[in-house]
Figure 1 (tube, each protein chain N blue to C red):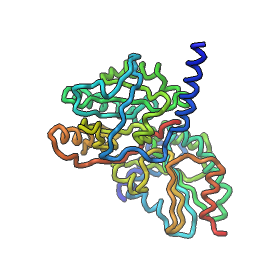
Figure 2 (cartoon, chains in turn green, purple; figure 1 turned 90 degrees about the horizontal axis):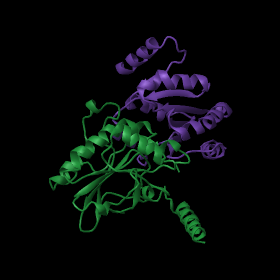
Figure 3 (cartoon, rainbow over the protein chains, first blue to last red; figure 1 turned 90 degrees about the vertical axis):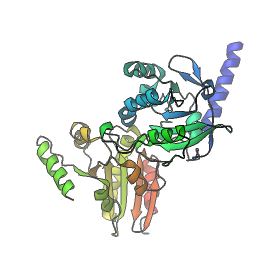
Figure 4 (tube, rainbow over the protein chains, first blue to last red; figure 1 turned 60 degrees about the horizontal axis):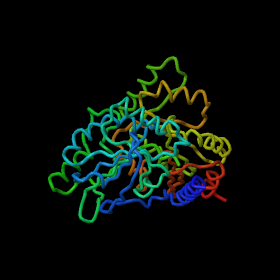
Length: 203
Length: 159
């Protein structure tokens, strides 16, 4: 009976989520308050932004294993975490794809990738794909920098990591670093939004 | 312009074993190709060999290219494959799939500049498509079925 109930709840949750996916661009804008979440990490534990009591903010990265642009940036995402986690801006990576469509992004594959690359940041599964539509992420990689304020986690930057996906050594503008540096110094983020090509999130 | 010439030469000479000639542009060089002021309807699709939904809808563009070529409709497939994959993946793909529509490659790292120039509403996800004729222009950040693509195209065809 218990399993039946559980099953019913799961079916309901699934059906509900199927109708709440919103991909028509009504995501966050800079200045909006971003939702918290409770998503499963590759270590099996659930992770929420509210777990990070000492954080000043977050570098939320929607990313995955299978997109070449995401892969091109994964070392740079790791470097961001190494540089900014201790300063109060940890990287929180979220894998938004439907793993039935992209099995290469399933939890086992995420674990393997994180292990192979030595990720030091949480790599979370957006199970049910409920979180990315609220943020308005459309592609991987897609970055949201949040600052912890009294109102909540305020979106301060949306876009790309930097201006050269091909070659990290040829980058002339480090959008994410510049934004986090500005926030750490209590200054206004100059470039608040950037665009880049990425892989559409698979629904 | 010099850069394009150089790139073209480079491509021609670097892949003698491949019969496919691929034109490679930066955005400024591509721009005239996606804003032609003639009487034709132009369909421009941004895609890549690694993009599964793009590859899935490519045949639909091929059908349009074949079916409407006498109706002044031109299809341009703009590949966003990484330059390192041009010879390894893109050219073999064009050859093996026998792609008849014109394929060019866009190699321009300053995406924050040109993505917005292609369309102010483009977040950067692919596939993405433009259909235009003269001043009339529509942008689509989405995938198409054959029917949907044809329905959109028909809005641009003269009755």
